[in-house]
Length: 308
Ligand SMILES: NC(=O)c1ccc[n+]([C@@H]2O[C@H](COP(=O)([O-])OP(=O)(O)OC[C@H]3O[C@@H](n4cnc5c(N)ncnc54)[C@H](OP(=O)(O)O)[C@@H]3O)[C@@H](O)[C@H]2O)c1
Image 1 (tube, rainbow, N blue to C red):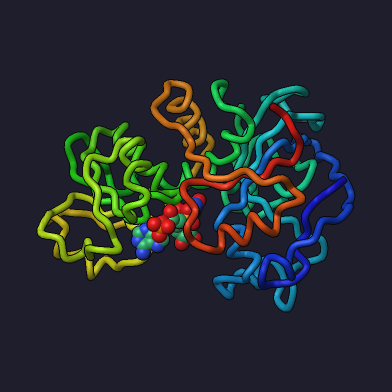
Image 2: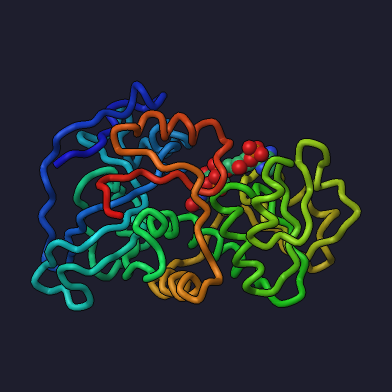
């Protein structure tokens, strides 16, 4: 089957190669997904760069393990199921986080129907009915990370939350989720993204190129630094007395019910993905170069096959 393998750590054009690799066979507890779409996720880009360094302990120390296929998120259709699989059947349309098993940049991916570990095995669920495959593939990693950060901060109705990095993947999910919890959202982004963040619910905006939000006179119940450019210490003065700072570190356990919760929000039109660009699998190098700019708005999709 066709896949993108990561042969070296470094720049996209040096690291990523289109190759033929063996089609996987599902174990008894796994499903085989025919992948329609995946993402150029910032996590994939960071593994490609071995950033942070400890990624080498997981994915190969001197160079990536043989035939390492990146890809943290997938959507597609189940082609076959292992003999012990109970919850899914051939033809089911699914979306998934692949965890450290990665493997989304390929025509087929096996995943267990029930995950024992979010990070090791990922999470699988039926695709939201009102999303295309290209839309659905952008949800799992960013949606779950944003959700867990807001839940960890005990977000609730009427609270004031500041979201830094509001125009990125996490930021665009976080704004909509915070509005679902009926919080008042201040979005920090550059002026060119004001219209985007307002369109998905931001109540106030701060242009980070003109104003340092950590020096603002406003006080917040929650600061979610989704782009991780500040510290808890620097944000102390803009937090209320019991205010909470969160920045993607130490995520609590993430389970299937969390992915199903996002699916429900989407199907009730409370959450929608923001897609910046769509590339074909043959344009994977360009897609990663774009992610590396740090300027993407929402998510970047990789089309594996033309499904819609
Ligand atoms: N996405 C995930 O699922 C996930 C999961 C866990 C951890 N993380 C980590 O979380 C961080 C954010 O991930 P992401 O996927 O949301 O990133 P992203 O989509 O690549 O973020 C890009 C956005 O950030 C904005 N930005 C850049 N510098 C900024 C600054 N100094 N202040 C405010 N906005 C700024 C950019 O807008 P401008 O063009 O206006 O600068 C751009 O729209 C990364 O460190 C990532 O490794 C991500």
